[in-house]
Length: 252
Length: 260
Image (cartoon, rainbow over all chains, first blue to last red):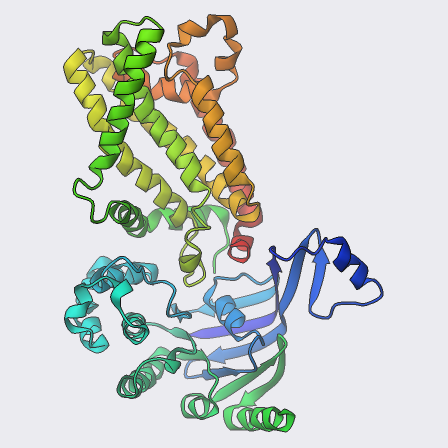
C-alpha cells in the first residue's frame, strides 16, 4: 500500500548571497516587518512553505498549481526527500522517483548510454535492472544512434526525452514530476502523456506541478493550489482549477 | 525516510556502484581527448619527484639511493592526502545539480572524492614501483604493513573529507583556509627531509599528526617499520575524528541541501 502523508510541514530556505547585515538595509528595515523573510546573522531565510498538510493514497494523482514562486518545486523536493522540512513530518511508503529538473541530473560529457547507467544508479536501480531496461529506454526516447553521443550535443528536447524515458523505466510507487510536459515536440508529448497515464495507473501516487489547467484536469483527480507557500485550496481537481483560473483572470 | 546518522553512512557505503562510477567519470572527463590520458598524473608526479630529488638531494648533500625513494614515496602519499583535503571541500558544492535532483545519500559524494583520489594514487604508484626496481629497497616482511597503513590513512581521510565537505558548503572560506593549511603542512611534514634532520625542532613533528600518517604508509615502502606511536596516533585520530564527523552529520546532514 503506497501512501504519502504530509503533516503540517514548513520549510525556510536560507539565502546566503544577500547580505542581510548591511547598514543600509538594517536602516531601511526599522519600523517595517518583511513579510517574506526573516533576517538574522547576515542570512536571509525565505519562508518557502508554511503549514502544508495533505494525505494521498494509491490511485491519487495530485496536481500542484499556483503562480511562479508559490513553492511548487520546493514542495516536490520535500516530497522527494531532498529538502528535509524544519517543521512537520513527511510519511512516505513506497519507492519515490523524482523527475524535477530536466537539465540537472544528466552528465553533459557522458554519452546517453552512460547517462542511463548513471541516472539508473541514482534512482536506485541495480545494474541488472539497468541493462534489462536499457534497450527499452533507448527505444522510447527515440534517440537512435545519438545514444552514443555525449549529452552536451543534444538539443533540449532530446535531453528531456532521455531523462523522461529513464525515469519512466523505474517501477515507481510515487512519481514526482515538475513541469516535465512543457518540453518535447507534440508527437513525443502525446506519447509521454500516454506513458504517464500507464505509469500512474500502476504506480499509485502521482504528484505533478503544471502550469496549464487543461493538463491538470486531464491527469489529476485532486489539486492543490499553492499561494505564497501556503495552501490556498485543496480538493477535487475541477473545483480547484476553476477557482484558480477565476482568481488569475480576475486579477489580470 | 531514515535520518539515523549511522544508517545514512551505511547506505552511502552500499551505493558503491554509484560513487565508483562518479569517481571514474571525473578522471575520464579531466583527461578526455588527451593522448596519454590519466597517465599525465603519473608523468607530472614523476617529473616533480625527479626534479625535487635532484635539487634538494644536492642541497642537503644526500645519497640518492636513499633520498630519491624517500621523496618519491612521500610525494605520492602526500598527493593522496592533499588531493583528498582540497577536493573534498567541493564534494557537495560541485555536485549541487545531483543533490538537488536526487535523494541519494550525501556520503556518496564524499566517497566519490576518496575513490577519485585512490585512482590517482594508483597511477602515481607506478613511480614507487619504478623506484623500488631501480634502488631495490623493498623488504617483503615490512611491505605487508603497507596495506593496513593505507587503510588507516584512508579511514582518517574520509572523516576529514566529510567535515571539509560539510563546512565548506556552509562557509565558503573553508576551501581557501584548507588549501592554505595543506600548503603549510607540506613543509612541516617530513616529505623532502628525513625526520631525523629536524632534531632541533622536533616539536614540529610531535604536533603534526600528518607526520605519523605519512610515516605509517611510507616506512613499509622504504623497507623499514613505522614508529609504534604512528599507529597509536592514527588510530586515536580516527576514533576522535569519526566521532566528530558523525556528530556533525547528526546535526547538519538535513541542512546541507539548503546550503548548496
